[in-house]
Image 1 (cartoon, each protein chain N blue to C red):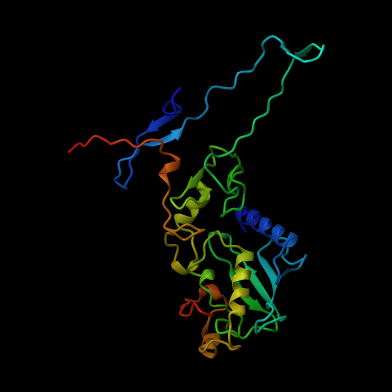
Image 2 (cartoon, one colour; image 1 turned 45 degrees about the vertical axis):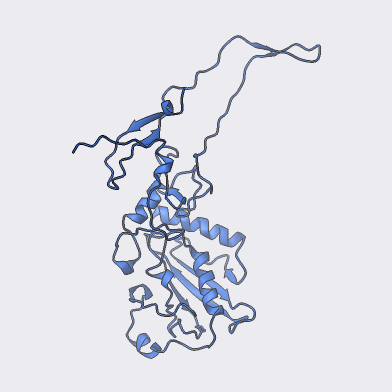
Length: 152
Length: 153
């Protein structure tokens, strides 16, 4: 973790702990002192298929953050069934890969993922889930994603 | 003193062929003179005679032409340094794009010059982090005047 990355992450953490937006839960003791890995709870929004369900997102930051994207995936016992979320927790979301910009943040990524959950019309994993989960790398950043559906 | 006199004119090589002259604000070289004149008497409405013996003047600086107050990349105030600098001000200047978004120059250059997501293999990022329009530095913030350069052909 570089000093510059650390300073920006500290700012983000401070802001999230003082005023986190609805649906985003940050544990007071969540990131350990090196700030490299965070776990954040996201709560399915009212009136959506995931209403009230709580999922855990894991962020892992590299030393280039925010110039390179964090690695973000769902972890824990409940991985949301969603057309863009694989059963191993990997998320197919363009801002986590090609469309990342350093103006994005932990908060904006969480909100994008919540909005992606909210727009689902069916609770199911992607069609290629079985193959992907068997063959993918442990690190979702290593996946060459194809983004084909902007609607969900 | 006219507006032009307050600037240093620098001719730069520029690849966009619009033959412009970049004018940057001149660095303030002359130190502010310390006022040590005779005490001033203030006119008053009362019978008191007030004499000013000493004034303590403080100043504050701010970048010109910047609307928002924090850099969207490092999240620090524009008047503070980027996350890699120690001295604010001229050593850690701002850059404004044609889209009018501003960043610390060191922040936006680090973004446009490469270190990007692992997915595109460190290719250059030509877009503004905030609006995704093509990133081009606005010359409006540096250019006060456009001048036709003499044709040499």
